Every structure is written in structure tokens, then in C-alpha cells.
Image (cartoon, rainbow, N blue to C red; front, side, top):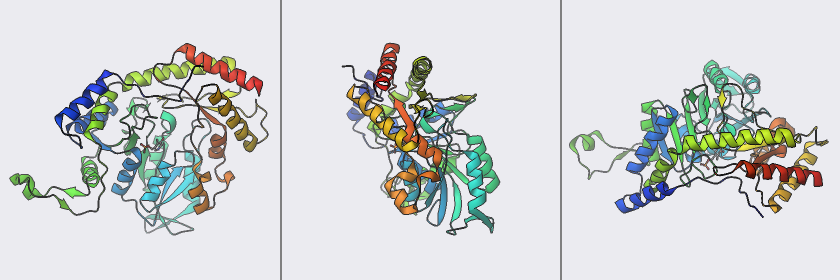
Length: 407
Ligand SMILES: *Cc1c(COP(=O)(O)O)cnc(C)c1O
């Protein structure tokens, strides 16, 4: 039986060589490889500064803290995203406020975002206060889901109108563009992930991007326990002096072994994205001709999708599914049968309002965010990675065809 993982990283001899050099140098904590990896990755995205971290979750936390998010504040995030987006908000002491998404792009619905701000908040001393809790609205954490940018220009417009901060969760979206502008260059801080499920990997890892040198400096300090090298030590070369610690920071540093791996990976980024885009187009073509039960992912005009994940929706009309409960059960049975046949698939991501912590703490109902709920139940990620052939993809689509016919 042929076996297909949902994704797999793409390595060559270069990763091994660079990692080996790092080990031979004896310097394995954050060092020259991380610095070079930051430079090259930021350069790829057309941004001045990259600050490497241990994960995208810690990158988000670092960025939010730097932008002043703390308890007594609200941060708005889409209801359909990996739980790390809202967990990072919770880690700052702030309260996540959810907004629904579009079913076709899986990204934040900016009309609903505007409606939420107008309905839920009142102006008070130049700040937006939550009518129920009195919390101050800090800002928005939009997500570029699965490698497709959200309508970030609309988000930015609203942020400007209401004087809000924006930190972009671009965990899946390294290399994604609108026009010629990459994620990270939309005027806000953005955060990416180097988990093996993403386009390129350092095992675990993340990076914050900003064009603002001051913000980058502050994030580098907070990343290293909140340390600042005193002017005295810097000017007089007194290396024996410990730095000053005027803030309680974190240790979110990437190791130089990971930095070495990242350096090899970032060179492959354009190739990986091109291969995945070819694969996505091939799936689109195969599914259009063989699988009317599937709705393929869209790439709106002017957007450049990286297909970190290739996520379809079950077509509930074609399948005659009476409701989402039945639809979700049908989807899960289908995924189990595919797993049994050696094809690994996944639900796209989850509806945050249905996850235990959030559901219990905020008393959410499934219908509060109907599109997030629908995508939670009907989405399917198909295997996509460098090295898949057109025959592999045809075999996968044919196997799904046969499996549905048997159900
Ligand atoms: C993967 C992912 C994260 C978390 O990234 P880590 O590097 O694993 O911490 C956050 N947000 C989204 C949308 C993700 O897909």
C-alpha cells in the first residue's frame, strides 16, 4: 500500500552540512547562524528586521507584549485558527474576542470585524471600551490562514480608523503576497512559524518581522530576559559586566543549530512554494473533473497563495448533508477510511470557540461563529509536499472518489 503523509519537510545535504558546521564551531546557542538566518529571511520578505524565536507562539507573545497588550485589554482574533493565536493572547493576560471568517478564504470577515467593534465597544477618553467588561480594545490579530493573506488592507483601515494595534499571525504564510508585497510588509509586526507543518522548518521555531528598528531592538531585549547592555559596558568593552535588566523578559532564543538549518531551508523557500503551487493547481484540475463533492481552495485575484496547506471543503449541497453535525460525522468517517488506505488527511484547523478552554471560559455556542463552525466540520487538508508526483495526486483523488462511492 502506498503511504502519503499530510506533509513532509524538504531537506538536502545542505541542512546536514550547515548543522554539522555549527556543531564543529562549538557555538550552539543563538549566534551567527541565527543572525544570518534573520537577515536572509527578512530580506526575502522585503522587510528590514527579523527576530528569530523558539516558535510562532512565542513570536506572537513577544510581539503582543512589545505592542503593549496586557490584562484589562481585549484583542480580536478570527474564530477559525490554530489555538496558538488565542493562547498567545491569553498568555499576555488579555482577553481574546472572536470574529467569524469567510468560508471560501478561511480568513477573517472584515465586515463582521467592523460590526463587532461598533456593537461591542464605546469611545471613552479616546479609547474603545468593551460595553460588557470595561476592557480596553487593544487591537487585532488577523491570521493569514493556510498560506493565503487575509484582507489585511481592510484590517489596517479599520485599525487606523479606531486607533488599534495589529499583530499579524502569519504562521502559515511565509512567502505569501498581495500584489508584490509579502506578508510582513503590510505595515504591522507579523509572526511566522518554522514548525515542520509549515513551508520551511527549523524543527521548532518562529520569527517576528518589522520595519521598525526600535521595535526590533526592544524585542531582541525581551527575547533575552529583558537585558540591555549598559552604555558603559558597550563603550569601554567591559565584557565582564552583566547587562542591565530593567524589564522582566523571556528566553525565546533560537539555537544556532536551528539557525543553521534555517539558512539551508530559506534558500529552498521559493522552490518549495513553486512546487506546492503546481501541486495545488493539479489538485484543482483533478478535483474539478472527478470530485464534485469537494470545494477547492480559492486564490483571490492579486493574491499569491503559498499552500502551506491545501484545504478543501465538503460540498454539503452535493452530498445532501442535512446539517453540520451529520456533515462533520461524514467527514470524519471519510478521513478514517482514507487513513486506513494509507492517505493521511486532516481537518483544516479548528473553531476556537468550540475548544474546551474557550468554550468553558466564555460560554460560546456553536452558532456564535457559524462559518468557523462549518469549516471546523467540513474542511479537509489533502497531502501536499515537495516530491509528490502528478500520479500520486491522481491516485489520491481517485482513492477519495472510490471511497465516497462506497459510503
Ligand atoms: C502553526 C500555527 C501557529 C503556531 O506556530 P508554532 O511555531 O507551532 O508555535 C500559530 N498560528 C497559526 C495560524 C498556525 O497555523
